[in-house]
Length: 586
Image 1 (cartoon, one colour):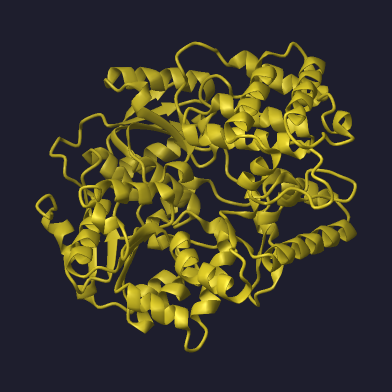
Image 2 (tube, helix red, strand yellow):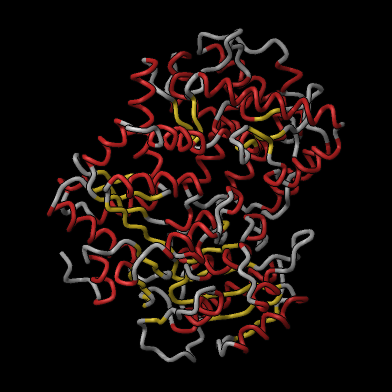
């Protein structure tokens, strides 16, 4: 089982280990899965937890040779699934007879619940922007507002701001009273239950699981730290796995903090294993990754090739010219564009290379939102984001049915069941709407055709359309339709797909033959430019985002930089003796 591990990785298997600090490409997953298999074989009752389904899928795939280890009494799944299954659900069922409903975010609610809008209409604020304050009360966190939300928020009166804040708080309270939980809220419920003196659930959990392994520990907030501390104090051996430089979730108050430092301070040296050998990237890429690390330990490549190998290229410019230059580098390096990913902090920056770059305006109208989802679908080159776009359109279609006074059920499967249709039928409708958006000759034709599709859809269900359908699905204004028409003209149907683009958070844990990392055109308001943080050794989230993004590359890294920032980037690379080749696409 352990023959494939290096000596560095094999140290993870020592019984006394409580923390693994692993750099990118260090074989961390292989070592952690090997520990899970070893512990589960020796003493069943081991849980391997992560914060994403993608990471869980990798762990399950690597354990498929021992399928019995994936079954009870062991557990492999997400952090939330574990504590929902063994703590929250049994407690709520016992107390109320109700099975809780779990959402990844309040954004997953039906449209009429997921946003709180002014009484006179408008864009509104996502319900996920409400969070818990220090005293546990529910409050709107304006720091979470997106650009368009913040602009709309600043334009309404103080009375409207108070009204929106209170209605959002009341809505969340009513959802919680019905035992509908976002991931953030279900963790709080789990902590409260584990924190109860003499907690039966805690005692049962500790009796059942002798070891819990938690991957991506750097993403744990104070609630999750507290949950794990309860398990440790009750006698479960907790093993945490982290790379503090990959903490890129400050929007949920997770980043380098005293929590992580305090946790490390409570460990003995023999309880900590450090993995710094990179089996993914070439030496020059490892040098760039090391330059961005906040910790002093260098990432060393296992690749024996010389540092002078042209693994890093700098392309100066933006848009389609930069894309053409980057494609030229890929071709010269023998890398298939299909094996490459364009990455940036913001998806819009990643999508700024090549065609289909016109941004659609934010809008509170239904058809405007459908066009934005259609654009997401047509831009996307991965299944996840296509399905997200289809899901948004499906929800808009469901919103056009008259659900009566009780409104739509919160669970999508319940909505489909009540309608007496299949999920496939709903998905086909969404794809038809995308086709109409793509091919409609003008805004009026788009509007009337979508209205007709909704009416025909309603005829196949047990519900009528809403009485104001023509008003809700009103013809898009020129301000909405003209950017959509420009976007359509940029998309070349039936030709070779463009380079796949993602924001960094979507590719965390992945790796690619080549990465094109697009640096932002400008700094965020009131913040230094990310390269200034790199130069000054400021451990900001923007800098850590670059660290995560470029460390996805195996063979080739292309940095796309605005001309105004080229001088600073060259200074950084040359300061740390990182070799690169320069291409000017301005």
